[in-house]
Image (cartoon, rainbow, N blue to C red; front, top):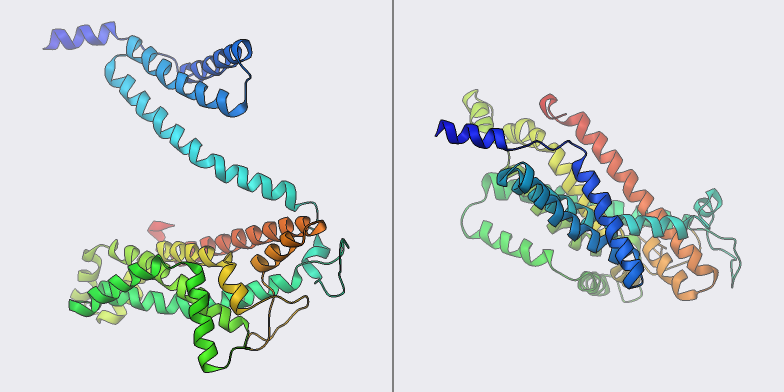
Amino acid sequence: MTATTSTLTTRAGRLPGWTPWAVLAGSFALVLVLMVLFGQPTVASVAFLGALLFIVVNWAVYRRVEGQRPAKDRLATSLVTGAFVLAMVPLVSLVWIVLRNGLKLFSWEFLTTDMTGVFGDMTSGGAAHAIIGTLWVTGIASVISIPLGIFTAIYLVEYGKGRLARAITVLVDVMTGIPSIVAGLFAFALFTILVGPAYRSAFMGAVALAVLMTPVVIRSVEEMLRLVPNELREAAYALGVPKWLTIVKVVLRTAIAGITTGVMIAIARVIGETAPLLMTVGIISNINNDPFEGRMATLPVFAYRQFAQGGVGLDRSWAAALTLVAIVMLLNLAARLVSRYFAPKGER
């Protein structure tokens, strides 16, 4: 047994750390040369065929020099890395397209002016009214959904037992898959019954978004609370801490980073919704700071209307999309800072 191990160790070589990079460069170069000679090369075809050739050649080289186990490790690493790169391609391309097209009209003037008095192909006008409307609608929806979602998740994890808890879980699962237009129809029907068919407001749109946002908050917070070790709860109970105080001071404090991330995912889920806001909030060309009365512009609806208009409206729609992406990024940054400040010291 010892002699065999010693023989394998002696016969197995060791490749330098730059070997994968050399194999990668050689694979892409070979594919590019062959495509030039026998076909018409494209970026997608060279990248795809070069990646496949790299995975095979890299595995073969390591198997020949270092042995079977290092070759399998390199194969798994190549597949995982390739999957990551493949997943990043649409994200990077999306950000690049939004930046390239959105920066044409994106400026301080675009962020601080509205569309009052702007007609046809006039290049003036901006999305200030839509930004304010988006903040109003999303803010009210968050005020409704976040507490409701957190309290429901706490009930399901800490208190819920029996048929009621199972029924709530089923309802949450069903609500998670509801199409956005259905949420808009629900809010429209509800306010038509309560107020009248002509009523439009940011609050009406916020109710529609809250229907979409609440199940996402519940499911994400529930999963984060279940990850908190029971030993922490038992230690608090052993010290005589009441259950409600244990939840506030121990459970929620431990899971605050995950809860914040889940809440941000829920906000990002609804901030770009267009269909329910078309039905409930509508669109205007000026600023409306009353969330309970009157139509109000939002960035998704503004981008949709400008895109449908054509001409310079296309540039405005891309600038509105860039503004929406920037708002989501700023909200994520703020959430990271909040979770970092409130998380226990061991998790910072």
